[in-house]
Picture 1: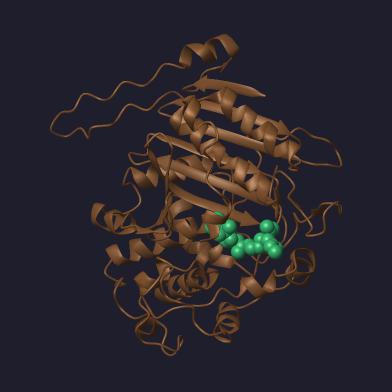
Picture 2 (picture 1 turned 180 degrees about the vertical axis):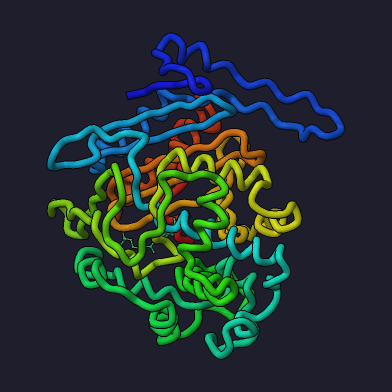
Length: 399
Ligand code: HEL
């Protein structure tokens, strides 16, 4: 299903949709007006085709929502629940996995603004003896350049048994850090980018140490409350998603084996690295607000947007990814992979247009790769013929 609304208005049909497909004009630049390059209108037919492919490749359902300066586009395909066959909705809540990392980074950057934390100070200044190397700084952690081994590589080497072993477990942050420290570090502090959940477990410890409260309280007081995010929750160690949600289905490693309903879990293995629940609307609001500078000072946002190149289409800032699309547009946000859910949540640099796309399966590289095409449809509009096959590889996400 494809629909669009303007402002708070009624859902528009297919004819109205085609009328909306007019390229946005560049804003007239004045002394206080940032120049915005013209973005083509979202390609909702292309987006629907991306979601159809994701479902054909094994996702029970997929959803996408674009918020573009008062216009909302909603596209869905398939089901939220394989047992009841309820159609998936763009209002359904879901587990956002590592999109949580941006929330954690925002809290820490707010603490930098409040002069309670220094990005270039060693983590051990705030958490004495936590890490075996005093050279690892807060900035290294938030940019995945600490060299701390990702303990989830071992935990989920076998996808289903690894998941079942932790689905109901409750870890302390320090237990998760200890799992990482059993393994050699991947690089010297600051020497290389190496994505690791351990970094954002350390971020959670920092948040709790500096605020004296739980990460749940920090997310609520500093992001969820101020932005009025009605679908966003941190319920750890509860295992249920509140309200209406899409169920999540983990794809087993063995071809042909049935999907595993992974919806209920503590997500304790991730916590501040990946345990938030949200909706497409809330993630669009969140990234739009972040990029518009509503969550921290301009100076801190500039720090967040200092990117290390990861590969030809991806770069990483502080808890923030940049994806460089085929049409020359770069978008900013994060991806998430948690058992049962893949998420892409990205906004333009000025926060004017945001996309959240979700499939309710995981451990399915084809679906992950296909869903990346939602970024092209949302931000590049209808592809020129030579760009039709250009979809970033799933492997680029992890690297
Ligand atoms: S992985 C990523 C993604 N991030 C990282 C984090 C997250 N998620 C995890 O670390 C979960 C890993 C296990 C997920 C599981 C599955 O697909 O359900 N996979 C297996 O069990 C594989 N054997 C870098 C992709 C991100 O986009 O940032 O979220």
